[in-house]
Image (spheres, rainbow, N blue to C red):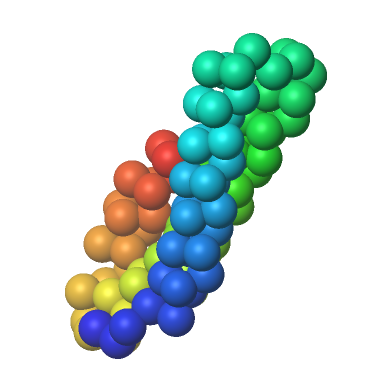
Length: 88
C-alpha cells in the first residue's frame, strides 16, 4: 500500500493540538481566566476532530478502494467501513 499523503497534515494538526494542550496546562497552573482556558480547549478539540476527519476520509478514499482493487471484495470493504464509523 502506498504512503498516505494525508499523514503529514494530520501530524501538523496533532502537533498544533499538543501545543495547545501544553498551553492549557500552563494556563491552569497560573490560574488564567476560565474563558481563556475554554477557548484553548476548543482549539484542541477542533484540531483533533479535524485530524480524525482527515484520517477517516483518507482511509475511505484510499484504503477501502485499494481493498476492492486488490480483490478482497466490496463485502470486506463495507465491513471495514462499518468498523470505522464507530470513530466518527
